[in-house]
Amino acid sequence: MNWMSKCVALVVAVTLAGCAGTKFVRPTESELTLGKTTEQEAMARLGKPFQEASGLSNGKQTRTLSYAYASMGAQAKTAGVTPVHALTLVFSEGKLVSKSYLSNLKEDATDFDDRKVPLIEVGKTSVAQVNALFGPAPGEAIFPAIKQPTGRAAIYTYQEMRGFTPSHKTLTVVFDPQGIVADVDYKNQGKWK
Image (cartoon, rainbow, N blue to C red; front, side, top):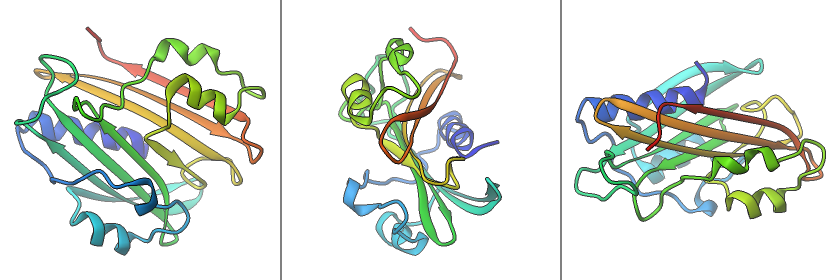
């Protein structure tokens, strides 16, 4: 199970358990910097995670800190959906290599228009064009969270939970060092209303 699947499983578990999880405030871009922020700095900023895990990604040891919170007093973007938000942080060699935020809260939902995914062309589409299609990415990753040692990925992820049925979609766009799309991975699971 990769780190994104773990994040989805965590949000589903928090929601199904009817548990609040770990209450946290979404950090600003400057508070969590890929390749610089340490695990200790992240925990000092965010507190104790709801879940911790260790693993291996592209031959490197990783540590994952997961924060998820089901906010029953909040309003979801879509009626009938359990309001949740989650943050997954992956560290390797003591430094942040991936951060991924998802939210279905009305005030900061990370939903994206997946009908535009076919407009992304490997070898042609630029970072600016992806941002124009989907907006700034709520997540990003570098090696070893992605295979390309010199690339960078933009991560878009969204989830809705209706009763006990989750729907989840994730778009990961990997850019080469020149900012051109090198790879696209899109997954859509569940039923959307």
